[in-house]
Image (spheres, helix red, strand yellow):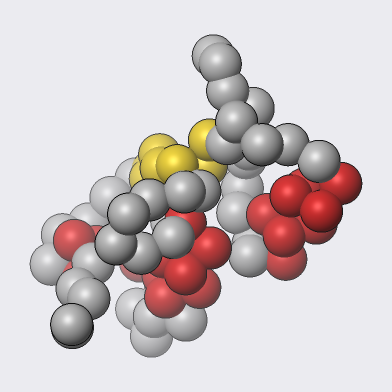
Length: 74
């Protein structure tokens, strides 16, 4: 299945998403966004939510170049 991101068609100031999503995980989405050639899209501020928060989760979130990661429940 070819996975298309909405950001490829539109411009966003901020993206708010969960780490665990059914079709494409949050880390994969972040990687796809961060590697886009259009800097106005690849530099978008990404905030992710997660219910599972540990040192490993924090390291993975930072490695994926995500901007903020408030743990659930907000």
